[in-house]
Image 1 (cartoon, helix red, strand yellow):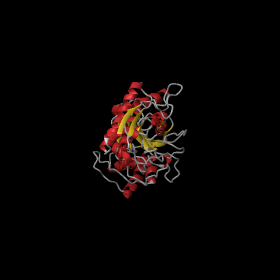
Image 2 (image 1 turned 90 degrees about the vertical axis):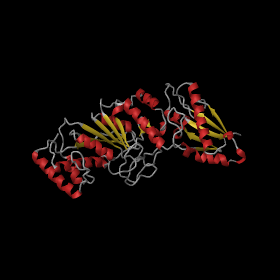
Image 3 (image 1 turned 90 degrees about the horizontal axis):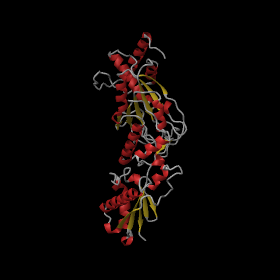
Image 4 (image 1 turned 135 degrees about the horizontal axis):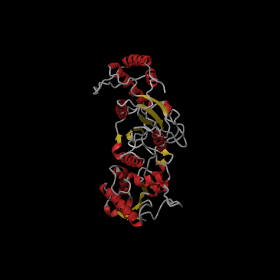
Length: 410
């Protein structure tokens, strides 16, 4: 570990002061008069990296997700600046953790002190601190964190961050894990958090976070293909449950929805034109079936709930229009299907309640009630076998089995 000598400190301060003056700072009138700097260059950040802090310093681990599924932005969002500035007041160092894909083993990227001039409260020292925070925001989106394999394995990134024994973990990610032990393309956004936690715990896939660690999640749901409000809320509930099960206190978990300045958005399809590996955003969609429709439960309901999500009527509008336009006042059956969790009676009750909720929404959209019949079949008609030989659930099959089907009565 290098020590910051007085001569080296003076050189660092002078270099950063000159660069800061040239780049310009914006003073937002913080309580300690530390300015907020938005523009830093490679020379400034190189100087910051060269001023290391003693090994006893606290660590803030910043997980930077620059996979192809994430909406492109060049610096970490405002919440990162808040966390980094707060950690800076404790003379912490920052370390960066990449998010990579399937079977990728990555070490953290070497970090640096957030307070290169500790105990110096002069104006130029404050500008140096502002530059350190600005460099960290930029490095959280930097090329050193680019993935090497397809997908996004967020659980592995969390485990890597935990090994640094940080007092604070900041996660700048859309939250869409598509590799490793958690693949939302398989589980769906509406997987029950409790069921998922139980399965990951059984397989030994939950990371172990340090006791008392604080967790701040930035950019949740900020994907290259915009998610609906319902999917973002489902992600929030899912990650809150996973973080709590991994050892974080519920009181120490926060989600900051403030967006970062957008760069050129990545197109759908999983790459951004810069050679990033494939990382496709899972999108549940209504499927047409021979004059009928199959609707994934994740588009309609929260886990284990029969209460329709706020976006449901938008999802059902086209279905309602087509039913109203069907010739001869054709009648339809609305059938609810569930996954195979819980008791048979409970599954049937939930399936009836969900089918009834969809029927009522279609009526609100103008479909005559007498043209719709409701039934619930629980898990008795799965699309795919769900229970594995060891008694656990195939989460991908469970996602496909949770659905509402609307079919014409022949």
